[in-house]
Image (cartoon, rainbow, N blue to C red; front, top):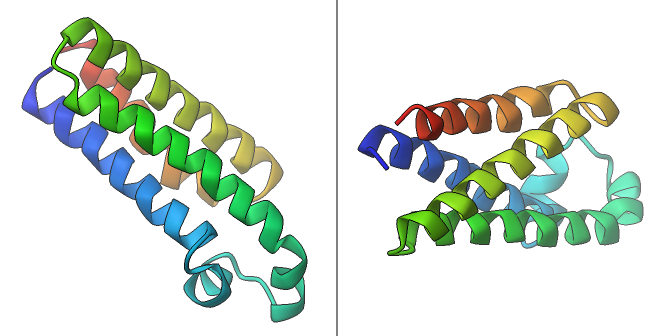
Length: 119
């Protein structure tokens, strides 16, 4: 995989590390502010956000395996899977939560996927 594609995948991975941290470790502080939630609403959705953060962690893991695996076929499969999942999740989030999610998740994933596919 060319360096440009690797960098794009790494950017998507890092975005999702940040999202995982916002949805889990830093939800009560920074996460609540980023997601625009009152303290009352944050208390209600905290368990669901933590669960969502766990799933985003799985996407991070898939992309990390894709970047680090020595077998190009295995690496490519993980990268494609991870990027497609991020893209679909971003579209779904854009439709159900906030259009901003499409730009934060789907657009970077689509760019990375195009770089990987046309490499």
